[in-house]
Image (cartoon, rainbow, N blue to C red):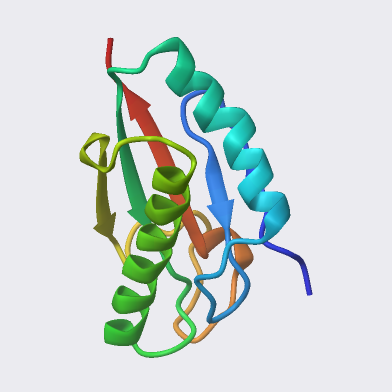
Length: 121
């Protein structure tokens, strides 16, 4: 089973999660430090939006709650790393806005994620 990792795209890093989990691995946490914290140091007035997602395995209402737990886990990690909580907003998208469209009931790692969107001056 793959471990959750953080991958970087130019505009938004993404934290991936194991099936039915909102736990961030140490590797994901370390990579989050490297990307988000380095950006924060360059622009400490930026805002950070966290968008939690889930795949289509499981019930829709459960996946909505799971995607919120994932977003909250990333927010907690960022606050622990020194980013002020008032600079971070979170939202849960559940099974909507899939990275890879799948049929209902399908497990897909790419859809189990939190997108980190950094904007500001």
